[in-house]
Length: 318
Image (cartoon, rainbow, N blue to C red; front, side, top):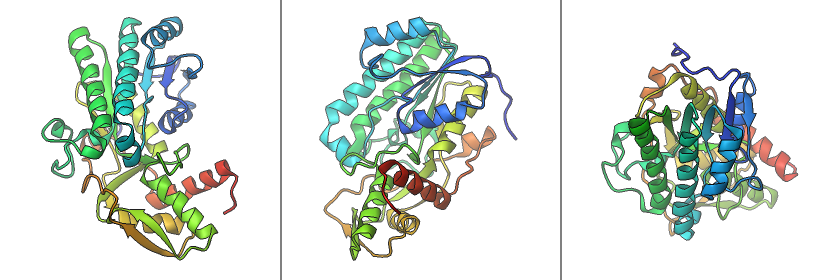
C-alpha cells in the first residue's frame, strides 16, 4: 500500500540537477506526468563545481524542489585512474547545490548517493544502518567518500536548519542513457558493448573482467526514477533510503543474460588479472518496500530495452 503524499509536486518548480546523465534524464521523463515545471541547467549555463555560478543560478531560478542527480561517475577503471577527480568534483557538486538550495529556501531536496557507500564486507543484505561500520571497497572509495559526505551534508542541514533534505541510495543502475565507453563504463554497458562487438565479428569468445564470481544487484534506471519521485513526495526523515531490486546475481550469470539479450552465443573468457571489486553488494530493500514501493522492470526485460536503445543511439544494426 502506497504511503500518503506529503509533498505533492503538482504546480511546483522542480530542478533536476544532472538532467543529461542517465539517472537525471530518467527523472525528467518520470516528472512528465506530475504536472510540475521541470527546470534544467546545461553545463554551459552553470558549472556545478563552481560555487558562485551554482548559487547565482539557484537564486535566479528559485526551484521549490531539487533532485540532486549530478555527479562524476564511472566504473572500476575510471575510479582507479582518476581518484582526485572523483573525490573533488563530487564533493564540489553536492556542497554547492545543497548549500545554494538552503540559502534559496528550497522546500525539499533529494540527494542521490550510491550503494558503494557501504563497507566492503557489510552483512548482506545491507541495511541503511551499516553506513560507516567498516572499511570501504578500495576500488571505488574516492567516489564513496564523496557520496557519504553528501548524505551527511543533507542530514546536517536537516538538523541545524530544519531543511527537508533527504537521501536515496540506488543500487547498480542501467538502462537508456547509460555510458557504453569501455574505458569508463559500468559492468552492464561494458558487457553489452563487448557482446555486440563479439557477435558482429563472429568472435568465438568475449572477455569478462575478473573471476565472474562477485554478486551484484541491478535496477533499471526508470524504476530508480520512479522510486526517487515516490520518496520526494512521501518520505521525510534523516535516514537515507536504499533503492534497489532486492535480488542479486553473479557476474557470470549477468554476462550470460547480456549475451542472450544481444544474441551472442560465444564463450565467456574471464580475465582474472582484473579486479573483482566487492565480493557481494546486495542492499536491503525492506525500508522502501515498507513505504509501499517496488520495481516494475525485470532484468531480462530491462536488458532487451537497453540493447535496443544502444543500437538506436549508436546507429548500429542488430
